[in-house]
Image (cartoon, rainbow over all chains, first blue to last red; front, side):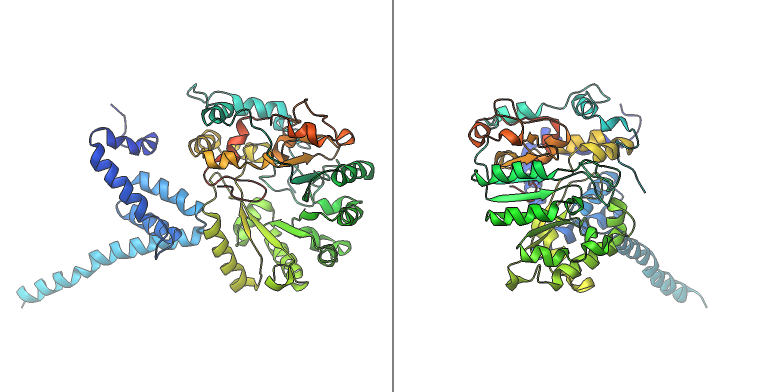
Length: 111
Length: 350
């Protein structure tokens, strides 16, 4: 049993998920590869989106992987941090926008 | 200013110690697979030359910069300089050979006092001339300000390093103020016609990662560089070559100091690409050192791994036919040229 839930060495074992369900893993990795290929968005832009999402889902593996990937694809430190601020703004905004719901309820029941 | 590994008595200045590091077991006691075995697995061992096209000459280790990743360990404190006599031996070899391109590198090759004479003499032989110009030398001293015009006169193909389109990341790798000086030099090269489509004067840039990671897609990086340099500085260039940092010399020192060595080597080994291995530059290149010895590539030169003894090892007894029959000398650093899209002095290979 690992002493921590997250082990950095596990990142490169991602492909091993095929051991318990090869068919689904194959479909997933094939889809994953296509998602990140150059398309109407560049591979660099997709990597920045992945970096932002990684911070939203707070996945240490993904943060590690997409920090390196963003650097390799030529993103600047500033672009990478701006992407994370986008994630932070949406997360913060998602809490705050529910303030309207709170206000609605307050106004409903307060004289 | 930073000093060379040699001047600062760093143990990695000893090439045998570099080779020892490259071949030692990991902290977990595992061994990276031998590069030669990887080539055996794809029926490419022993690695043989295809055809000699490129004659690369390192005219000296002296340089006005001390880049943190430099595989030559070049700098102002390096005094090794090719003599005119050795250059004459190079010229005789080139004239008698099938070489198409002469690729002049350093250090800053322009700091060799016989550099301009050498370029003029190669020009008379009618071969393509590449100069690997670090850009800042053009603005370093008044005596170098006319280099763009000199290059234009001899239709020299310029290849210059610019690791990034921002000052912070460029200067972190190449030294304080290098980005600003490089921009000035690029504008001077553009002004005489370099990088302009219709001029025929070729200006290529080299991107190499400023840290322990691999280069991304060369084509995508080229687009990004062109956009940023045009909009930010009105600079034009022809091609961008994405080059992988090989784990030798100062970059090896950086990897060890920053505790990135094993992860970087693992990345190179994991990314081994058979197509890139087939197209490695050592198959069509010969590399000559400042003192006239022959190597399979510039990296082998810096590790003091001379060409196999089946051929004469010095330019004074250059024998193209014998060189074409040699087995290329390999070691663990060769993984740097076969990772991902591959890497060479001309960028990606796969």
